[in-house]
Image 1: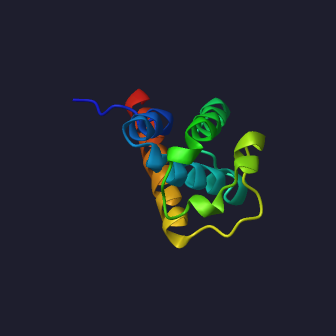
Image 2 (image 1 turned 180 degrees about the horizontal axis):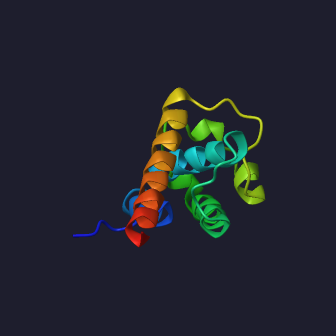
Image 3 (image 1 turned 90 degrees about the horizontal axis):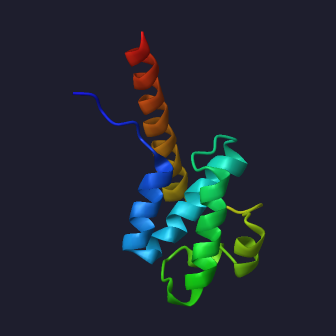
Length: 111
């Protein structure tokens, strides 16, 4: 049986629609991957939609790392010049590895 290709966009939306508080780590991980690692795993459209979703739900979101994001960051759809917690860095790298492994399986299956 073939494994489905890993899709970070789908995983992110499935997670944050179940628990809006999970939008904070997804935003931080995505920003870290994009700005610090130059290896984005969410599409630009999903990242922008996540920022909009967070703005719309800002007052209801509770997360220990929420203070690392401002409403201005979300309005601009960015997160520059931040110190990212180690847990965010590790989780982002895990998502990237899962995406790369999935893409590698796809290439191998074509051969």
